[in-house]
Length: 363
Image 1 (cartoon, rainbow, N blue to C red):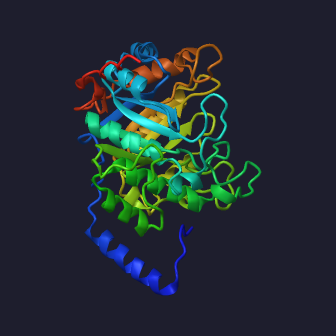
Image 2: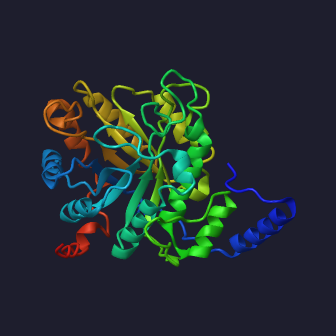
Image 3: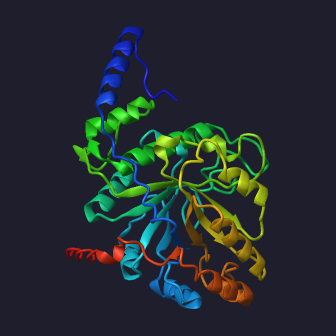
């Protein structure tokens, strides 16, 4: 994945110089933003309006502490920020590389890794640091789900290759984390990128900033616990970017695929078994499943590393199979289980403590 070629002598000199710069670099320290023990942040996915959030909150008589927003690459955060403020939640921002309407790919993992999406990453760094907004960033979740355009595997089990290998996914993830976290001069950030064989920060809308301020964000890496499909090269460990780039390890777990063996095996993965754990998405699909709710809450309660528990309610009214209102017994069970005092309703610092965005100047 080398991005440059040099002659032998000059290459050695450059490598030595980069090593010295990297040794002096001081990238932003990792933030876990873990709740105080034994607390677990209770959360819900974002449907795009505060009314949807309030309806879910009223259904369970519980204020979710976290609101997980799913955004395509390059999307503005202004509207989401107002929802996070109005609901007094701490955001989880899931970053996708697919258009949310057409599902067409907007940018490949290789293009992200090589700097083709740096304008957006600089925008994220600036937004979270400028507002002092504590948040969780979840880049390219479920990479081992073949239906996601950033996956390295096709649904027939074959490798996509090209700009969609697991290697490019890991490099894309590392670049996202390096730039969004910030916390150093441009020279320091570029040294970090060079140390993993990636090109320096690029910006097409003017020169890159001299400093990338430290953003108060925490990074979630979240593959499926097994793999879809379950083939060689598509298991979680194939996408592991390394402990330096991950603050939380998470996964998604739904009632239609309750493979507890995979969940347990993933939870105990040796590379990430010291990281706080998130159920980044879970939900009931297709039929009333109160037993599944009881099992997953019990599973969470027995594992003290699990500190985040986010219910996924899907998108849109009508034919939304994740809508809790379709499953009255599930809803009643979740309402009772959500009373657990360890399921926290608020984070100490959330978007509700921040002022609204200033009005846009007239055109």
